[in-house]
Each structure stands twice: as structure tokens, then as C-alpha cells.
Amino acid sequence: MSQELTILGISAAVTAGIQVCGFAVAYALQTEKFYDILGGINFLALGIYSAIDGNSEEDPWVENPRKIAATAVFCASRSWLLMFLAWRAHDRGGDSRFDEVKDKFFMFFFFWMFQGIWVFAISLPILMINGSDKPYDGFSVLDYVCIVAFALAVIIEVAADLQKAIWVKKGREGVFCTTGVWFFSRHPNYFGEILQWWAAFGIAFGSGIGWSDAQWWTTIISPLVTMQILLNTGSTGVMQANGTRSLKRYYDRCPEEYKAYRESTSILIPFIGYKSVPMFLKRTIFFDFKRYEYQPETEQDVKKADEEEA
Image (cartoon, rainbow, N blue to C red; front, side, top):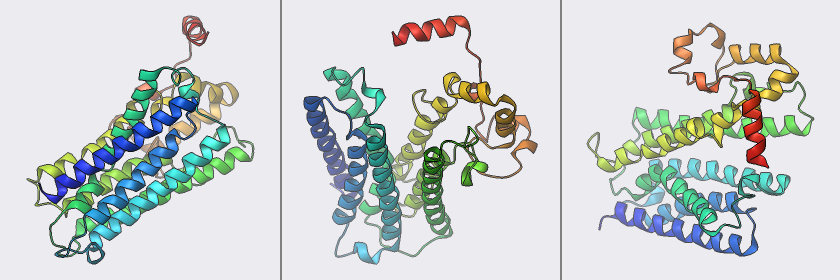
């Protein structure tokens, strides 16, 4: 078996082991407080393991700048995720997503297994990079661009998370956040997360044999899964933030100001001049889809939501 497949197989086993053990303890204690934390630990475990197992006499890991750079940024990214999620879990005292499922064995187990699949899928580029036995032959232009993009994306996400947390702690001045990078994007944290995995996918190209490399194409699952979760999943990401009940507080308290902010601020990609962008471009390459627009609830919608919560 090749080194790449060995690392993939063991990484899958490590992920399954972490998540199953986490579930067993969480179910026994009836708690979800360390769910996100174990997700972060799982990421770091795969990054560190793949770096160690990807080392060889013929291609020492410490002499391969592509592996070093990619692993360093990956671990920095996931270390921040771990710290941020640990702080959030402590600050909130739990996670309401699990209130109705943590006492249901199979439903709770599904959440833990889904987290394992998510961690493994997102980590595919770094697993390929560290598992590659291709001798290092220097950085290409693509390597330089993607490594810089990877690092920049982490910086944007960290800045967005910190700026939003500080804004909340200060009392949510102005109702909606326009501090720092939030002035240029309505969801800069999600932009940073998505950009990271497209950049990692690009770095992995240099670890393969070119455009015909099937393993490299498999790593595109990482950015695609990230986009699916953050852009199209109703319980999280942009879909949740732009749901009717999430937007209602803004339109109730400052409708004109918030409408102007949405019209002039990109939903995802940070930049200036969004108001001048044609609507057909906003609805396509800028991801500002119509489904993210505010749709006031009807009496029937309110009644149905109340019945579901009862």
C-alpha cells in the first residue's frame, strides 16, 4: 500500500476513534460541552500525525518547505478554531443544538459521526501534502499564491471572530456589527474559512503528478463541503445568519440602516464598492442569492414555529 493511502486509512481510523470515544463519554454524561472541542483536537491530531508518518529518509519532512508551510498554517488555523470553540462553549454554557438529541442514542451518535466525516473531509488536502512521496522540487507560482492565500484567510477569520466577540462584549453598539473586516463583508469569518480550503486544495496540486492525479482531485471535497455547510445548510453559516428570524431583529430595530448596509456590503467576499455591482453578478459569483433576502413571517409561519417549539 502506498504511503498516501496508508496515511488516509490511519487518519480515518484516528478520526473514528476520537469521535466514538467522545460520543461514549458525552452520552454517558449527557453533555455536549466538549463536542466542538474534540472536533478541533481531531484536526490537530490529523495534521501532526500526517506530518510524522509522512516523514522518510528519502524525503525528510523538515526539508520539504511545501509540507512545512502547509502544515504550519493548517495547525495555526485549527488551533484558533479549537481555542475559539472552547471559549464559546464555556461562554454559552452549552449548545442548544443538542437539547433535543443528546438523550437519543442514535441521533446523538449521528452528530458525532457527522463531525468525524467533516473533519476528515476538510483535512484531505493536508493529508495528501504530507503523505506525498514526491520529492520537493521548489515552489511554483501557484504554491506561493496559495500559501499566502491560506495564511491570509486564517488572519481574516481570526480578525473577524475577535472583532465580533469584542463588539458583542461591548453591548452590540449599532445593532449590527460594522467593525473592522465586518465593514467590508457581512460574513468575513465564513469567507476566511472557505478561502482556506480552496487555498489548501491549490497547494496540494504541487504534491501530485499534475492534472490527471485522482487523489488531488479528491481533495476538492474539502472546499466544496465547506461551501455546502456554510452557504446551503439551514442550521449554520450564511443560511442561518440570513434566516427570517435572524434578520427580523435588524429589520425591526433599524430597517433603513440595515437595508443600506446590506446593499452596500458584500455578503461574503470583502471589498469596497459592492453597491455598484450589477445584481446579476451579486446573484452569481458573489453568492448573494435571493434565498438570503429577508422574508417577513406570516401569521401562519409564526404559528407553525410556535407549535414546533412547544
